[in-house]
Amino acid sequence: MYRRLIALLALAGCGALCAAPAVAKIALASALRPHPAPAPRVTLPPPPAAAVLPPVPAVARGYAAPSANVPSAEIEGVTQRPFVGLTLENAIGMALSQNPDLAVAQADRAIAGYQIQAAKGAYDIRLSLQPSYQYAKTAPSNSFFAGPQFGPLVSETTGVSAGASGILRGGQQYSVSVQGGSLFSNNVINSFDPTYPTLFSVGFSQPLARGAGINPAGRALQLAQINADAVDAQTLVGIESTVAQVEDSYWDLVAAWRNVAIAEEALKQAVAQQRSNERLAKRGASAPIDVVQSNAQVEIFQDNVFSALQSVAQIQNRLKELLLANPADPAWAANIVPTTPVLQLPKQPSLAALVMTALRNRPEIARIRDERRAADVDLAYAENRLKPQIDLNLGYTSNGFAGQPTNPNASPFAQSSAQQVVAIDQLITAVNRSLPANQQIPYLMQANAPVPGYLIGDLGQSIKNLTADRFPSFSAGILVTLPLGHDTAHADLAIARERERIERLQEANIIQRVTVEVRDALQAYKSAVARLIAARAAAQASQQVLASEMRRFRNGASTTFLVLQRQVELADNRGRELQAQTDLNKAVVEIERSTGSILKDNDVDLTTLGRGALKP
Image (cartoon, rainbow, N blue to C red; front, side, top):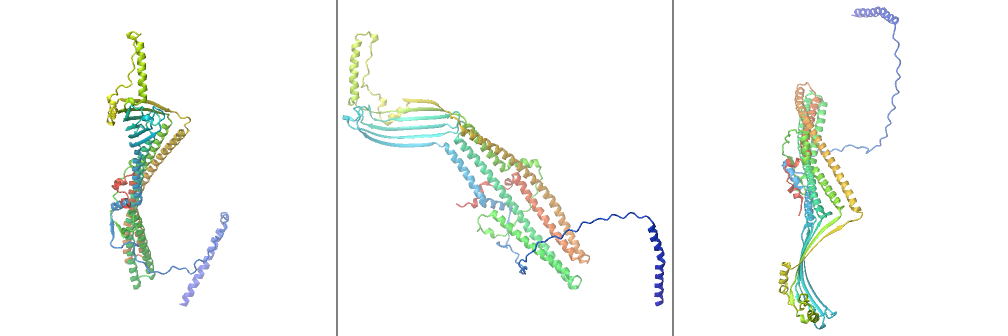
């Protein structure tokens, strides 16, 4: 044996030595062949300087997470069992009837209605009634203004006056008044005592320039009506926002509960894998580290379950804030479970059709157009104020009179007048003796001529004379007022024009914003549909991959790491599918909101807004 070993060593040495000349020949030949010039040496940049790190102080020395027991998997503040089902329709109804903000909006609508009523009050008929009584006793100033035997002058007046006045929509002003009464006086010159004067008067004024067409009362009424429309539009904006928030929160709660189910299913699969690894490790068919790895994955999925429950609690509270007005409402303790199925996908309309629907239905556009209408009213009013004031005034008065005639012989004025008439008639008689018949001078009428019968009587006779229009009077006139300078009116007109321009700019801006919102909503809808299709396919594929990986694991062809990896992928893809479905539901809601059809689609009744939140 040793001989063979020595022979082999000798043979190996001989081979090496015999090979040496060949090697030398190769080296020599290589040296004789021309060689390319050596490559230039590359100068490398110096290594970067070491980063300068700031010193870190010792914070909370000995800090470590405290040990604690796993808390119960319950949602705080609610009764865990039984679950309370809630449809989307009922959720919207509760929000619209209980929401305090909508209750305030409803009160604003009522106030706007009262403001219209108050503005109409400018056209109310104003009635007046004034009974009066006056007694006066004055010293006689002369024999004609004195009582009998030059005594005190005594008068007693009793009367009543009534009237109605107001303005019309065209700025016309009108007034109607009636008066009646009795006057007792012991004045010696009175031919009647007592007397019963009555009066009926009508006045009318028509503006021909300033105030014609639009006037302060008309402007106030138009602005009140426009404001009511604007308040309604603003209320609709709030309702749309509330409905959209309720729908979004509702579908978020759907997703949150389904996310809990996904997390629990992943946890169950991880626990099953953990127990399988423990059995394999006990038999020695698996490394103990596989048990540790599966235990870590169980804890991660356990954390996911609690995170999902926290989302349920937060979304429930957010939804209840929208639905409930009273913090003591027992519904706060309800564990809400959505029962409405997933929204049906609408037929995808064209962008042009959606934009046209939005421009027709969006309350924001109606509100800005109401504001522009108000600016137009102010502009028309300011232009009218620059005109001169030219008013046509018409009047008509009918007087009535009656009384009890006095003894004419008791009046010193009547006695003196009678003596003067007798003397003048005597002179006329003397003159007429010398005049031909066709030139005779007529005699004076007797001072004590009888009183006409229609003047004799009481208040009833006076009213008869009034209605018979025995003593009418008419008036007509034009009032012209020309202010100098008119700086205030010119300034108001300039302000009104600027405000009208601002409203036009804002209207264009609102239309552009609404158009952009519709475009974004349609794009989000299309994207959500595509993502849902992809996420659903990925989730189905992940389910198949996990099943295959578990079969391989049971056959010894896979590892714990790969199984856990497939479980994580399945949970993630299920979560993405759930998020895509939720995003699609919200995209449908956003299309309804952006086009202004969300109220019609949910049959919203404006009369019930905030009724449950209003307390008498």
